[in-house]
Amino acid sequence: AQSVTQPDIHITVSEGASLELRCNYSYGATPYLFWYVQSPGQGLQLLLKYFSGDTLVQGIKGFEAEFKRSQSSFNLRKPSVHWSDAAEYFCAVGAPNGAGTASKLTFGTGTRLQVTL
Amino acid sequence: EAQVTQNPRYLITVTGKKLTVTCSQNMNHEYMSWYRQDPGLGLRQIYYSMNVEVTDKGDVPEGYKVSRKEKRNFPLILESPSPNQTSLYFCASRPGQGFAGSNEKLFFGSGTQLSVL
Image 1 (cartoon, rainbow over the protein chains, first blue to last red):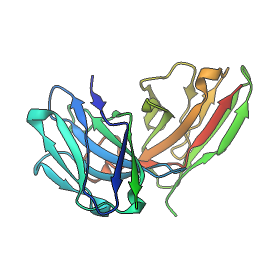
Image 2: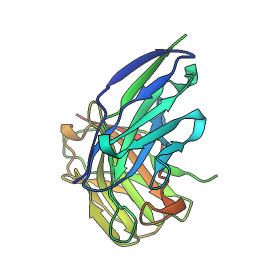
Image 3: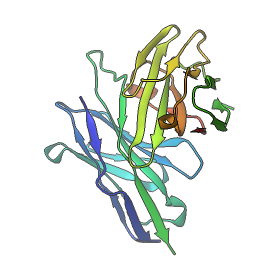
Image 4: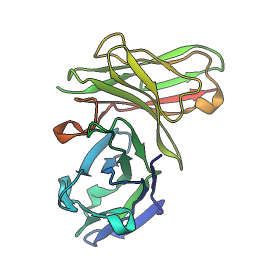
Protein backbone atom coordinates (compact mmCIF):
# COMPACT_ATOMS: atom_id res chain seq x y z
CA ALA A 1 0.00 0.00 0.00
CA GLN A 2 1.20 3.49 -0.71
CA SER A 3 1.80 6.13 1.94
CA VAL A 4 2.94 9.73 2.13
CA THR A 5 4.83 11.55 4.86
CA GLN A 6 5.03 15.30 5.24
CA PRO A 7 7.42 15.75 8.16
CA ASP A 8 6.79 19.45 8.67
CA ILE A 9 3.45 20.32 10.22
CA HIS A 10 4.01 24.07 10.18
CA ILE A 11 6.56 26.27 8.39
CA THR A 12 7.04 30.03 8.62
CA VAL A 13 8.97 31.97 6.01
CA SER A 14 9.44 35.64 5.27
CA GLU A 15 7.94 37.12 2.14
CA GLY A 16 10.53 37.00 -0.63
CA ALA A 17 12.41 34.09 0.90
CA SER A 18 12.71 30.72 -0.75
CA LEU A 19 10.54 27.81 0.26
CA GLU A 20 10.92 24.04 0.31
CA LEU A 21 8.20 21.73 1.59
CA ARG A 22 9.18 18.13 2.10
CA CYS A 23 7.32 15.06 0.95
CA ASN A 24 8.41 11.44 1.20
CA TYR A 25 6.45 8.56 -0.20
CA SER A 26 6.41 4.83 0.18
CA TYR A 27 5.59 2.70 -2.84
CA GLY A 28 7.25 -0.24 -4.51
CA ALA A 29 7.55 1.34 -7.94
CA THR A 30 7.31 4.81 -9.41
CA PRO A 31 4.04 6.34 -8.29
CA TYR A 32 2.10 9.27 -9.57
CA LEU A 33 2.84 12.27 -7.34
CA PHE A 34 0.89 15.45 -6.73
CA TRP A 35 0.95 18.64 -4.72
CA TYR A 36 -2.31 20.33 -3.79
CA VAL A 37 -2.88 23.64 -2.01
CA GLN A 38 -5.79 24.49 0.26
CA SER A 39 -6.58 28.08 1.10
CA PRO A 40 -8.62 28.77 4.24
CA GLY A 41 -12.24 27.72 3.82
CA GLN A 42 -11.64 26.30 0.36
CA GLY A 43 -11.30 22.96 -1.29
CA LEU A 44 -8.00 21.73 -2.68
CA GLN A 45 -6.40 22.98 -5.88
CA LEU A 46 -3.83 21.07 -7.90
CA LEU A 47 -0.42 22.78 -8.03
CA LEU A 48 1.53 20.24 -10.06
CA LYS A 49 1.91 16.56 -10.82
CA TYR A 50 4.54 14.02 -11.79
CA PHE A 51 3.79 10.94 -13.87
CA SER A 52 7.00 10.19 -15.74
CA GLY A 53 9.80 11.81 -17.71
CA ASP A 54 11.55 14.97 -16.53
CA THR A 55 11.96 14.76 -12.78
CA LEU A 56 11.65 18.52 -12.31
CA VAL A 57 8.06 19.59 -12.85
CA GLN A 58 6.69 23.08 -13.06
CA GLY A 59 3.32 24.03 -11.65
CA ILE A 60 1.07 26.99 -11.24
CA LYS A 61 1.83 30.06 -9.14
CA GLY A 62 5.59 29.69 -9.66
CA PHE A 63 5.91 26.38 -7.81
CA GLU A 64 8.09 23.49 -8.88
CA ALA A 65 8.82 20.05 -7.48
CA GLU A 66 11.56 17.53 -8.04
CA PHE A 67 11.09 13.77 -8.01
CA LYS A 68 14.07 11.97 -6.52
CA ARG A 69 13.68 8.23 -6.79
CA SER A 70 16.75 7.47 -4.66
CA GLN A 71 15.32 9.47 -1.77
CA SER A 72 11.64 8.60 -2.37
CA SER A 73 10.95 12.30 -2.23
CA PHE A 74 8.92 14.87 -4.11
CA ASN A 75 9.73 18.20 -2.46
CA LEU A 76 7.90 21.37 -3.41
CA ARG A 77 9.89 24.56 -3.97
CA LYS A 78 9.35 28.20 -4.74
CA PRO A 79 12.21 30.70 -5.17
CA SER A 80 10.39 33.70 -3.70
CA VAL A 81 7.31 33.35 -1.51
CA HIS A 82 4.45 35.82 -1.66
CA TRP A 83 2.11 36.57 1.25
CA SER A 84 -0.75 35.04 -0.78
CA ASP A 85 1.03 31.67 -0.69
CA ALA A 86 0.01 31.23 2.96
CA ALA A 87 -2.10 28.08 2.92
CA GLU A 88 -1.96 24.38 3.68
CA TYR A 89 -0.11 22.17 1.24
CA PHE A 90 -0.76 18.51 0.67
CA CYS A 91 1.40 15.98 -1.07
CA ALA A 92 -0.40 12.99 -2.55
CA VAL A 93 0.55 9.71 -4.18
CA GLY A 94 -1.41 7.59 -6.62
CA ALA A 95 -0.43 4.01 -7.28
CA PRO A 96 -0.55 3.17 -11.00
CA ASN A 97 -2.61 0.13 -11.87
CA GLY A 98 -2.00 -2.25 -14.73
CA ALA A 99 -3.88 -0.05 -17.16
CA GLY A 100 -1.51 2.87 -16.62
CA THR A 101 -3.92 4.76 -14.45
CA ALA A 102 -4.44 5.07 -10.69
CA SER A 103 -7.81 5.00 -9.02
CA LYS A 104 -6.75 5.69 -5.44
CA LEU A 105 -5.06 8.82 -4.15
CA THR A 106 -3.43 8.92 -0.70
CA PHE A 107 -2.80 12.30 0.86
CA GLY A 108 -0.18 13.35 3.37
CA THR A 109 -1.15 15.11 6.59
CA GLY A 110 -0.36 18.53 5.20
CA THR A 111 2.07 21.37 5.92
CA ARG A 112 0.70 24.73 6.96
CA LEU A 113 2.69 27.62 5.52
CA GLN A 114 2.74 30.96 7.25
CA VAL A 115 4.29 33.96 5.49
CA THR A 116 5.55 36.90 7.49
CA LEU A 117 5.84 40.35 5.98
CA GLU B 1 -19.31 27.50 -14.44
CA ALA B 2 -17.65 24.12 -13.94
CA GLN B 3 -17.90 23.17 -10.30
CA VAL B 4 -18.47 20.58 -7.61
CA THR B 5 -21.28 21.61 -5.29
CA GLN B 6 -21.71 20.25 -1.79
CA ASN B 7 -24.61 20.89 0.53
CA PRO B 8 -24.94 21.85 3.25
CA ARG B 9 -21.83 23.88 4.00
CA TYR B 10 -22.31 23.49 7.75
CA LEU B 11 -24.32 20.87 9.62
CA ILE B 12 -24.83 20.23 13.31
CA THR B 13 -26.70 17.10 14.27
CA VAL B 14 -27.12 14.64 17.12
CA THR B 15 -25.90 11.10 17.50
CA GLY B 16 -27.99 8.57 15.62
CA LYS B 17 -29.95 10.94 13.42
CA LYS B 18 -29.54 9.91 9.79
CA LEU B 19 -28.18 12.56 7.46
CA THR B 20 -27.17 12.97 3.85
CA VAL B 21 -24.56 15.31 2.43
CA THR B 22 -25.15 15.94 -1.25
CA CYS B 23 -22.51 16.33 -3.93
CA SER B 24 -23.15 17.30 -7.52
CA GLN B 25 -20.81 18.06 -10.41
CA ASN B 26 -21.69 19.67 -13.73
CA MET B 27 -18.64 18.54 -15.70
CA ASN B 28 -19.83 15.08 -16.76
CA HIS B 29 -17.01 13.52 -14.76
CA GLU B 30 -16.86 9.76 -14.42
CA TYR B 31 -14.95 9.60 -11.14
CA MET B 32 -16.21 10.99 -7.85
CA SER B 33 -14.88 10.60 -4.34
CA TRP B 34 -15.48 11.58 -0.73
CA TYR B 35 -12.76 12.58 1.72
CA ARG B 36 -12.74 13.61 5.33
CA GLN B 37 -10.17 16.03 6.68
CA ASP B 38 -9.12 15.93 10.31
CA PRO B 39 -6.33 17.89 12.04
CA GLY B 40 -3.06 16.00 11.95
CA LEU B 41 -4.49 13.30 9.70
CA GLY B 42 -4.81 15.12 6.39
CA LEU B 43 -7.38 13.92 3.89
CA ARG B 44 -8.55 10.35 4.02
CA GLN B 45 -10.65 8.75 1.35
CA ILE B 46 -14.03 7.41 2.44
CA TYR B 47 -15.56 6.05 -0.76
CA TYR B 48 -15.08 6.56 -4.45
CA SER B 49 -16.98 5.83 -7.61
CA MET B 50 -15.48 5.06 -11.00
CA ASN B 51 -18.79 5.47 -12.80
CA VAL B 52 -22.54 5.15 -12.40
CA GLU B 53 -23.47 2.20 -10.18
CA VAL B 54 -19.78 1.51 -9.46
CA THR B 55 -18.59 2.36 -5.96
CA ASP B 56 -15.72 1.15 -3.80
CA LYS B 57 -14.37 1.64 -0.32
CA GLY B 58 -11.55 4.00 0.44
CA ASP B 59 -9.42 4.00 3.56
CA VAL B 60 -12.10 4.89 6.15
CA PRO B 61 -15.50 3.65 4.93
CA GLU B 62 -16.93 2.50 8.27
CA GLY B 63 -20.12 4.30 9.22
CA TYR B 64 -20.72 5.72 5.75
CA LYS B 65 -22.72 4.77 2.68
CA VAL B 66 -22.74 6.17 -0.82
CA SER B 67 -24.72 5.71 -3.99
CA ARG B 68 -24.14 6.65 -7.62
CA LYS B 69 -27.42 6.40 -9.45
CA GLU B 70 -26.66 9.29 -11.77
CA LYS B 71 -23.36 10.48 -13.13
CA ARG B 72 -23.60 13.96 -11.64
CA ASN B 73 -24.59 13.05 -8.06
CA PHE B 74 -22.70 11.21 -5.35
CA PRO B 75 -24.38 11.62 -1.95
CA LEU B 76 -22.70 10.63 1.30
CA ILE B 77 -25.03 9.02 3.82
CA LEU B 78 -24.48 8.64 7.53
CA GLU B 79 -27.13 6.20 8.74
CA SER B 80 -26.34 6.65 12.44
CA PRO B 81 -23.82 9.44 12.94
CA SER B 82 -21.48 9.34 15.91
CA PRO B 83 -19.27 12.07 17.42
CA ASN B 84 -16.14 10.54 15.87
CA GLN B 85 -17.61 11.46 12.47
CA THR B 86 -17.32 15.13 13.32
CA SER B 87 -15.07 16.33 10.53
CA LEU B 88 -14.67 18.45 7.42
CA TYR B 89 -15.88 16.54 4.37
CA PHE B 90 -14.88 17.11 0.77
CA CYS B 91 -16.36 15.76 -2.40
CA ALA B 92 -14.16 15.64 -5.49
CA SER B 93 -14.47 14.59 -9.11
CA ARG B 94 -12.31 14.15 -12.17
CA PRO B 95 -12.95 13.38 -15.84
CA GLY B 96 -11.53 9.89 -16.20
CA GLN B 97 -11.57 6.80 -14.09
CA GLY B 98 -7.86 6.88 -13.45
CA PHE B 99 -4.96 9.28 -13.14
CA ALA B 100 -3.51 9.45 -16.61
CA GLY B 101 -2.76 12.09 -19.15
CA SER B 102 -4.96 15.11 -18.80
CA ASN B 103 -7.56 13.36 -16.68
CA GLU B 104 -5.70 13.39 -13.44
CA LYS B 105 -6.82 16.66 -11.92
CA LEU B 106 -9.25 16.38 -9.03
CA PHE B 107 -11.85 19.12 -8.71
CA PHE B 108 -12.89 19.71 -5.10
CA GLY B 109 -16.05 21.06 -3.58
CA SER B 110 -15.89 23.77 -0.91
CA GLY B 111 -16.41 21.34 1.94
CA THR B 112 -19.05 20.46 4.53
CA GLN B 113 -18.25 20.98 8.19
CA LEU B 114 -20.17 18.36 10.15
CA SER B 115 -20.53 18.35 13.91
CA VAL B 116 -22.15 15.37 15.62
CA LEU B 117 -23.15 16.04 19.22
